[in-house]
Image (cartoon, rainbow, N blue to C red):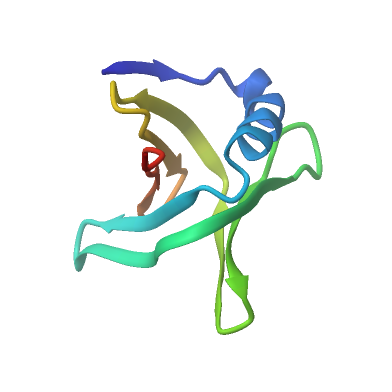
Length: 115
């Protein structure tokens, strides 16, 4: 497994490329809450994209959109990201951990392509 921290000045470019490269891939979005434990926000939904609200000098929020139908669509918002880390598995899966200034960590898991 390869793990790396994404530098803040590369976040927008990183997620632009990530969204293009993984568009339509099955993703799971999980919130890792210290008090209530892990909670699945989305499971096995096609990724639609990841975008930033960039008011001011740094990205202030990240939005992850997944789903392919109105009844199977999720939009998850992370306010004030501080750290973004990526782990690539040997099987092609990718995990992206987004740690905000306050609140729970979000884990985006892109499933390995099925052959």
